[in-house]
Image 1: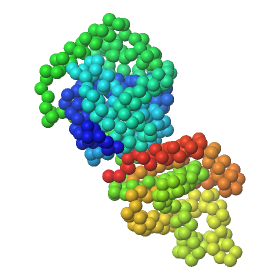
Image 2 (image 1 turned 45 degrees about the horizontal axis):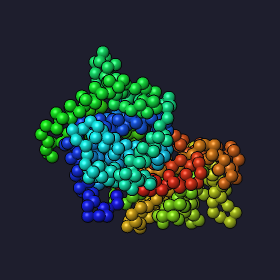
Image 3 (image 1 turned 120 degrees about the vertical axis):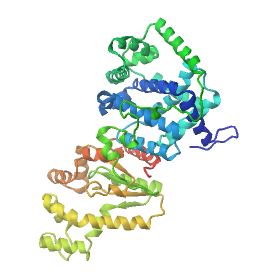
Length: 487
């Protein structure tokens, strides 16, 4: 986060302390309600609602998805994004979000709602509105979170963020079937705790908090004016009564400090996230101070292009497993000796050494022979990585480019794993063009690796290489700016 530039600007410590007090002491109920409204408004954006629907989390597990979001946001506000607890939350969010292709503008809009909606809610329903300084601190707090998430072009002032929020809604709010399905699942979940006879009336009350443009985008009918006026009066009365309650800094009421339907009285960060991702999210990673990026992907997916970009554009050391594998079979090596003893003249070149093309034809058509070769090479590659990592111990960031990262069990050497992803048809085309393989040989090479679908579930960041080079590099830049997944 950028440091304050004037004596009047609050320091990061002051920003975090004030936002903690606002959310946990003065306005805990209002903060939760305003962020519920912020969540609902994001469903008005078809690109967001369609992604949420594809994940299945809001339609199959709306309560868990709601609680997970509320708990992570509450922990950020309670502990601050610079604290170890806050950094762990941001790292987990980045690892969850990294599995999906999400545009920077959609990220920015969601971030902007965390600022805009509490400000608007408290001005309309709160026992008092936020002061100018409090609004500025709220903006600075979420800007710091956005920077740790690797977001680009975050508006550089509160006024600019509010303007972006308004213009984005005018441009992006559109009716779509996915909008309504996600919103209905969420609304049903919120009403589920109430007796069934009361739910229709409560639905009308909740819809009275939603503007007509939001209702239109979600396919809902707005509540009548008289009900909106009645609800407004009731919430303002509640706020006046709430203003008389004693408040103390030692008595906070964050969402994460209360029992939740999903987890009961206590939760752990390891429980949060889509169930299908939990094994991957909780798998041990490198926990040292060095950021170690495991760069992987299917054959001909584009990982070498990403590796070159990181090396040439950012000067990062890139350790290449393919190079180490070739070195493991270099002339005079123990690996070469073992291969020649096993295969003899079938792979021996004229003049000595290994004919790698001949070796490839053997191992990519025989799973048992491929397993034997991998058992020979993988330990040698791991040993070379360990040697190079010791040599580069002082480097803040190191890239481990490993095509068979998961197959070789090397993800534990990385603090985070990036997967360069593309379609199988693109891989086949690139592989045939690059290496001169015929279609059958290229398919055999693809079949020898884990399916991309399996690799996606185990990766922390998804780099989509189905589009242009510019789109690819934009994703790489965002991933590089994201908070390191180190402990």
